Image 1 (spheres, one colour):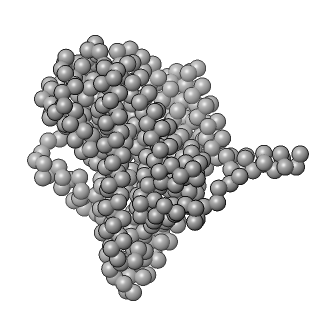
Image 2 (cartoon, rainbow, N blue to C red):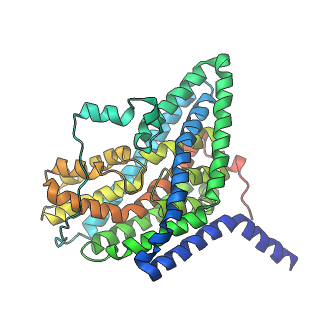
Image 3 (tube, rainbow, N blue to C red):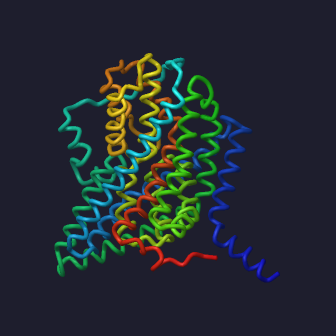
Length: 419
């Protein structure tokens, strides 16, 4: 009896936050189904939670990346780590794109998609050079503090970390400041995440109440195909990646510690908002500090398995709309190339940016006025699942990077699996 009580208490202690999160989401979903648009009255609760989360993300990314780089010993190990990260990111993005292409070829999308008219965003045009400049840099320091300039902030954080590392003894005080700031921001995010059950519950209520019915109609088949293939990728391929990284122990630890990141990704539709949960999960898996603090913040804007797969399904939908053949080899190769670019340039913002859609439409020569609205509709409706794969993929990618960087015994040396 005492053993059962102890096990029950241990379970509640370990999964209390997850159960509260699930409870909040469940209650929110029910409210959304019952009251429909009436749930807009509690939407501010979700907005407040997300705003607190987003305002804390910017300093967190700065401190985690810069402090992590500053603390690495100056050696070839740093350059090697970046090569491994890039290789892992590209590999999983390409694998996910190829899997979605196979899904579209096996279950072709019928050419009966209705072209819907929805308001278009104002598209800013410019030369390739100016667009790259805007992507990687900011005009002023304060512009780095915007989520719209995530890549610029990450690049700046890396440079600050390298500068601190190169400063040697004279830069020790600044390095300690970076370490201290990193710890303070982590504690701040722990406080904010305590309100997650209420915030995510309100957000889910709004999503279900306002947008749920839009899942039906002409887009049902491509959406169903996308969600089915993504669910297969999430369960089968993520399990394979985790097993590849750490064997049975790695597989068990990954599924024990990816629940909160998964729910956060689904609730917020933001890879960036999931960074804190991913960092916490990576810490519990005992991924080394210098790896998790680089891979996960870097992966949020750059590593996007879900966006890769959504890019393919959107291209397939556009081809079906205009009666074009999607099975041509050159078309498929071009689609893979576009998904790689999309996975890099799309920001980790909820429903943010239509760069990928515009790029695909332009490359294939479709009329923007008809093709972009449909791509935007599909993009909005697949966003939760895309974000789940984008965000959760960073956690398993960190495991793969650790396996390659630290050797095959990295997990058995540091982790004790709970009974």
